[in-house]
Image (cartoon, rainbow, N blue to C red; front, side, top):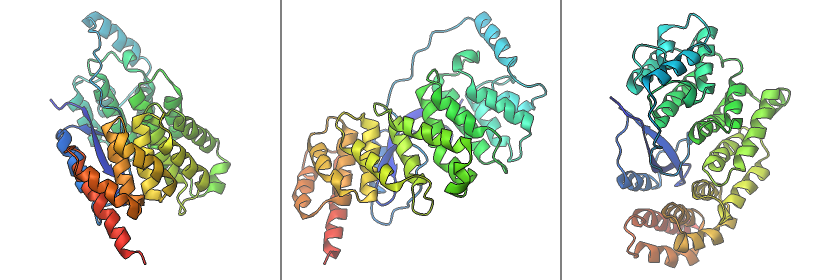
Length: 354
């Protein structure tokens, strides 16, 4: 049976920018540990493929140990859970939401892949019940990360529908606002805010007359305030997407200032600060350089040192060559690929300057 595994890696955001993302490893991925980090760093070389980020990093944590429930308790929970759904759900939807005869992670994940892009309103409402319910209400034996993996796949599916389902914005904002929901699932919903907005509203004028737009942007700013977790970093990525000059839905100066403030804030949680530092590198925010120089040498977390080193490669000047050479020559083997790449990028930039 396929298992959902969360592993921290680093991926590209623009030229050489690295942010942490959650990768769900099923049949499509295999866990690589620290080798994945080095592979991501190698990809930061000039000319590497550049993609819009689809996610962010969560702290690597052990799976939560959940108390076992008796079969009778699970049956009772399942009965109450099933009563929340509309009647006449298709068999595939029943399988996805955990009401089918096969309730393993693999069976449910595979069922999502069978669905098309023109779901009936009844099936969509059934998926909404699943997305909004707490794991504790579902009477399932799946672990938390498996449930969130299936739900993320369902949300991706809803985003691919020929017509965006009604009330999808309300659902995602509602999940984020519901602090009883697992942090990972709340974060997954925030990840989709940017892409959803770009598809839903073609201009700021069209968005400003829609209450869903205001609810979603307010939620983004709230998410950016959750700086002790990755939530803030996730929000920054969506906000950057929505303040892009080609799609100016949010005030660019305000968004860039927020990114800078989190990048230089030593009290900001490591996952969010890693994202902010790398976005500063992509945006050319040289104001982050002094903090990046300090963090590269004395940062408490490995990922902070990694992100700070890469950011120096993006933004540094000739005075940073010696610093990067020192880091390259250090005994930190995990940091060496990133520092070598950063030094190479810095020297290349200095070479083309008049």
